[in-house]
Amino acid sequence: MTITSTLECINILTPQPNPQAAEQDIAWNCSWSPDGKLLASCHGKDVYIWQQQQQQEEQLHDTTGLIVKEENSSSSSSKTTTTTAYNNEWVCIAELSDVHERTVRSVAFSPCGRILASASFDGTVGIWECGSATNNWECTAQLEGHESEVKSVCWNSTGTLLATCGRDKAVWIWECILPLPGGYNSQPCEFECIAVLHGHAGDVKSLIFAPSNGQFGDGEDVLFSASYDDTIKCWAEDAGDWYCAETLKGHASTVWTIAAAPGGARLVSGSDDCSLGIWKCYTAAERANNNQQNVDACNSKDGLWKCVGMLSSAHTRTIYSVHCAPARAGHGRIASVGADDVLNVYREVCGSSSDAPKFERDISVPAAHAGDVNCVRWNPRDGALLATTGDDGLVRIWRYHLR
View (cartoon, helix red, strand yellow):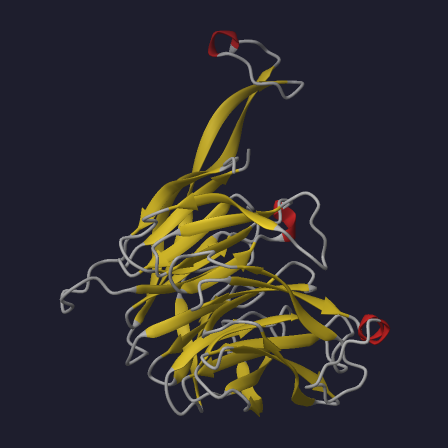
């Protein structure tokens, strides 16, 4: 196999050390803001928000816009303009602390980018809001209800729904009531639990919303939950009620992570069995034509999720996180990390089809962190930028060079 691309670590983000801690707090999770300009990461009980540094440069341009050399700067046709560019330096602009009593396990920016949710082992979910013109983040609510550790949190595409899950085997869905026009400084968002979903036989490890594409219930979203019980459940909404539309089975051990590809017609899962599962959504018509049965379907009009590919031995140890590149990246890569300390990027090969996808490893970085790598996330705006977090307490920013 020929390696065609490279990954370069361009920055390492390190929070201020906790003087009361014997060692550096583990970096569990991270989340990019929708515009890709901010990165939130959780370490111990705290959340840090990082921002890429900007630099302004003055350059001489002629009347056509071309850059001119310094010795020609006296030309009357030249003019000076100031341009803003980003460098590789990231700085911490906010530390969110003194709210959670135990480790923060997951963070997620809302689609508006001014609200951040943090899920903690203390059984609560923190809601942090930022003023529109400042970096002053304030905890405006703590959502309670889970019986024990909350392990994951995610938003739907419109920011109207927030989902949480945890060790109590339950999935909670909260409705987010956004403030009226006038900004987040005037009044905080309000949250109301609209569903508590039971069905998993073990811890629920992670969650992801995806578009229903009209194939499940009558809602715009479906919610996937990955569990210690080796399954993934697809939850859908019909007439205001959420139900389990399907249970996805294909892994031989705990499913730690799930990611939806752009468009929501493909799902990727990572497991303790060291494999990556590739799932395809078939429409109800396709299911009927192929005589495929959805034994869990509560609605005869529902579509069907089917495992159409398995990347066995994708890692040598547990896969903790997987993420699909955004559509704007244009390359369709899948990134995964795990307990083997490795960062892998996979690409779909020629001759692949949606019914029988074929992937090969594009690039692999051993010892990406000094210990387990817990999370990987593509930047939503820059398809060449990734972030990872690890047991070494660090956040690493990577530049992916497509060859």
